[in-house]
Image (cartoon, rainbow, N blue to C red; front, top):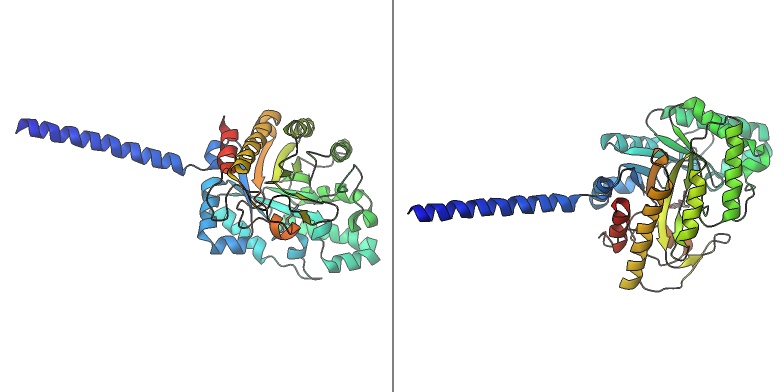
Length: 360
Ligand code: XIL
């Protein structure tokens, strides 16, 4: 009888140990990217979609500490017509970020592609008006969300697609390169606590473009313009050499600014940045390709950790994080697999590669 009781209690203890083991393994599995990272990890979202898609929401809560709006906070969304701001989506993003304790990144105040047609038309005719509008728009917008939007891409893509010259946009043509310094000043006046970024693409691969941007940053700093961050979009392609990326990131970090990998994704195919449209090199994705992509994601996280000093690590943001929703396919008319989750919202090897790069 005693023997049976002993055996029974042994069994109970063993079951308990097994149970505790399972639970801790489960919670281990439940850990997301944010739990492996010492700096913020973010994702780009469209608020109406997130509010309707619990699977997407679950991915966000599991992995991210920061969110950026893909398009809800661009000028054409906020000022779609003269005399009327449309705040509903930005308000909704702010509420979502606060409810869920996520950092909200503001993308973007001034961008040639984000400029609504009416601003383009009016601004083309009247430079004085355009200068006033820039000021009022930024102050109204940044002021409204003071303390709620942690940081802004103040100017996006102010340099030519290739090479090191300023992009000849409406803003540049009518206001001169001073539009950039002014935009930073207006934003800083409206929210002195917010981090203010200049953001652009291909800086990791186009040395002439990077040098042009670095020169601008030097000039802005010399003029006491309140710039605190540099965003590099990081729309990567599998064949961009790691050594070139590393070297470029090192130069970015040498500015002393906070560095944001602001729109990370990695394509297999290629696209022509100057023309738009893509070239379909691969019609399907193989396990080997996915493994290579995982290694690239791992390397990106490692380069960030190794080249950006801790005090400058603003974070890494994925630009869409599922192959189902990626902007690449519709935008470049391609079929690609650039993100960390697949079309069924399962984590890809890329997810685990990136996670490894965050912590090893
Ligand atoms: C893209 C969005 O993801 C698309 O949904 C939209 O149609 C066009 O803009 N660089 C940027 C982002 O700074 O704002 C762009 O976002 C992608 C390239």
